[in-house]
Image (cartoon, rainbow, N blue to C red; front, side):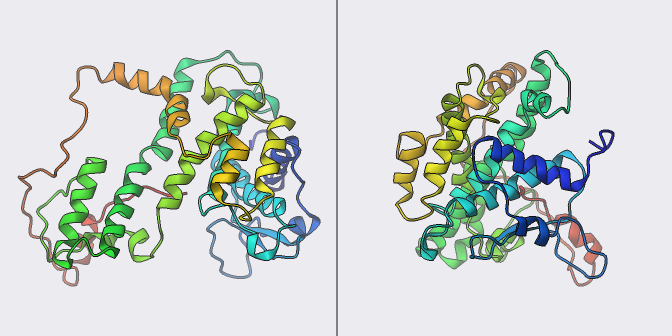
Length: 343
């Protein structure tokens, strides 16, 4: 992108062009005048990308510290997607200006990524010239995407399943940590590296727990994203592998999206799903179909391996004396581990 003299404004213009190509509304003048696309030099700001609706039907803004790379090209499409959704339901009464359920906004804003990362889209916007299909390239793309989308699903479910049972009073405080690891062992195949006890509280190391952020929204948004993608690909006339579908330029897909998005939260989300997909229920089948080439490749690569894990945590876990964080803070930090990103 740098070699082609891309600038930050062009990243957002490409994002706008994607949605306009579907027949959805362009961004407003206020958006271009009032958004923050680069880190200001005169003040400190929080650079976490976000999209804002100021409620007057014209003033929509993005706040981001953008770089010229493929990650931020995808981020630009995601944040502009939120703006497009805001604009789609702007004529609804204020109380209904929201996604049909809490997962709808994330599902729609991430939908574009499944198209813009295809070889077909890269050719259409001039990133690359005509290129033959490459199975190895497909597998690399699918594996990277699966690590971002699929791997986080059991984590999100395990965290909220534990949280719901705490709220229901089904887990005693003395068993908080035990049941935390029981959930993670059962659904993720992840066990504690050292022995834990009722005196420990490992959930507190997770931002989504201490920050009181529900993960079911993210869990459902991933399912919706692939479910919508499959339907829109069929609507646009795509034939072939689902992971190669690019809905860019499909007015038929855009018409279906506009009809559903314009309802905001004025109808039950199942009704909006029926309008967009023809069915009222969530389905994992499109996600499985999307990743089928990767599944078959992994199955072949791991045919000599023992796949899966036990439903319960290992009975033998190493004991380790962890130093006091106050006396040895630099040593204590290595016992923290990274959790999947929800970006």
